[in-house]
Image 1: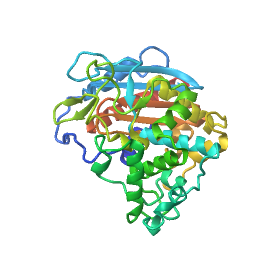
Image 2: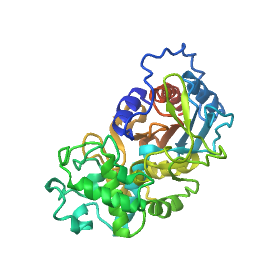
Image 3: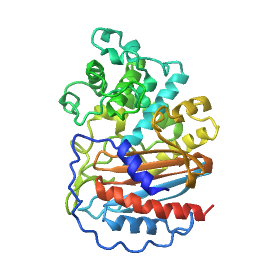
Length: 393
């Protein structure tokens, strides 16, 4: 699946940072010779986990999983490795995986649902939602819209660190924190050019706060009620999944110099909850597959969670291949047409999704670790999965 593009473009553009990598520098590390890849085989031959284990073992990432959808259904899925690098509990096909910035397409789709309900409009401005900001909003942000925020074309900053005021232990609800941070962000000088692509997690926080304010409902509740429930995503949620005392789900891991360090669910396991609209959703492979299937169908002219015209808005690039919650490549040979893609990481997890609507297919790969070695693992796996997919057509 064009692994070079997958890593060098998708990851470099769509990584959700958290104020420093937190991982070790593996540039000088020596990797043992990579064993030959197993035969790619064909979809449905029962050998997916063998291929996943080969890729996982290259850099000994704790666990990894994959789901491939085709023809409106799950074609195959698998999971290998350990929930924690320092425990014996094995990852399973039913586990939950942190999606990082794949959350952005979820937030954008939620916006599409609310637009169709006439709750908000793509052209709604922050100033329309918060007229009390008239005296404090920077002139460069007076005319930005919900659509600009969701397509990274508002000129808003991409902060290297998050303010302490939105930490989980800071006073106020997550919605209160988003609203306050949005006011602060909108008062600052734009760092990008209005109408041109500049990736911004902060822009999604502002967009999420707009949806919360205009509905009077927290973003998490909106997502659960307006997206998860209709799509049947009954085992999806927010933040690092699982109970630290039970080892019932995979844990995220820091990539240290010579080992992966597990991070138990709880404080410090994810970005602040207030950053939710930009990247805190977790889901099972089955659940996220429903979201993939809905967007592939929408790109093929089949309505679902939203109408086809709204899917077209979500999937149409604005600038530099950035659509609303998706990266967009107009023509990849393997996909016989356009590809919708995204990658996300809170530097403790990594997830990559690629949709090929022309082929009615898509794939999600997730790893419970961040850092260079997780990137490399997906790079190796991508070549074999592409060969496997092509052999099955």
